[in-house]
Image (cartoon, rainbow, N blue to C red; front, side, top):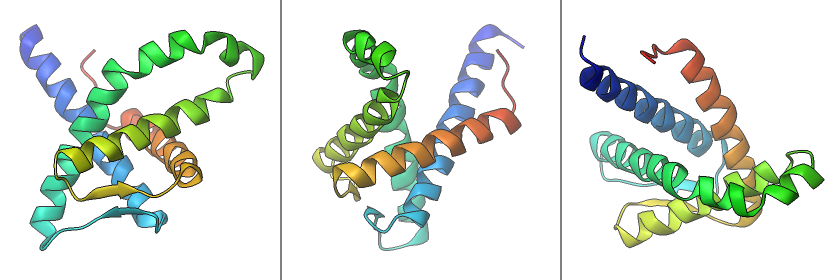
Length: 132
């Protein structure tokens, strides 16, 4: 299998893992909402939000982690919860700008949602195939 196809399949797997992790957070937390007229519309919106979330984590998160590196050392990594929450809030804001019906209400909801998404995403990435 060519490297391009492997990278594309890896991208799809990671997007589906993000979508699954977001779905669990939506299911567990009432202040993280995804609305739609039908199940198909909700599923499509969830995939689009997962793509936005992946893009935010790929582009923005490394910069934030670099800028807050001293805080990572000082807090023994606990600042990761805050960074993950900020990435989830940024995703919520971008979803609103893109007219996607996904919303995270409040910072502490984002902290808990970020924790849930991290754990579920990690678990899904362990069990889903990875070609890298």
